[in-house]
Image (cartoon, rainbow, N blue to C red; front, side, top):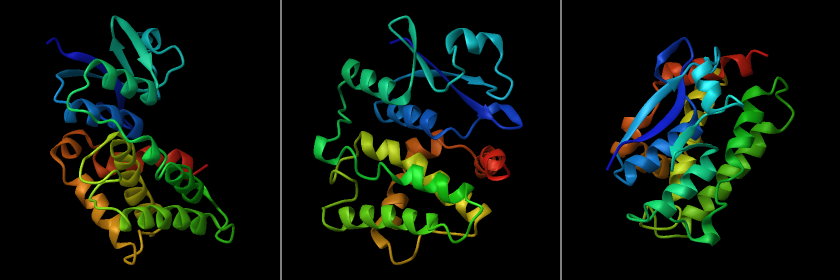
Length: 214
């Protein structure tokens, strides 16, 4: 089959290198896990060249060419890929679809917070503890059990950003006591698909700098 075309973020300060967008990585992980051939276009999102605005008028990544049309939004793209290429299935059972869904928002709030007493660290910890409790009560290693599904591919890049950015900017890491969360992230980060599609640490740090230094 012909390679699918996808446009993702180029790295901050090095736009010809894969950048740090967790939503772009989620789609790349889906393509890797489904063993679909693809061709990457890297967009300099701080400079937004015309060719990129032509395919993504709002300047958002990722955008993917599906059935001759450029489609934005990782949720939409992943849904279409699952329909068009159902094997191997990455469908998440509906009851697990929202597991961990508030972690990323809580992470961003804590990362960008200038007030150490605003409770944003505790809010993030609560979300991670709820993921811990979910993983603890199920036969893992993944959210839905033994099989990797879409919810894991959505969480993996976000947990990667959380680990790197909070380690760098806040000297904060996931508590040792959350053993299931830690082994879950290890299981995700050690997959070949993750190794192939992750941004380098320094580009994750650079990607968050403008938000942290506001």
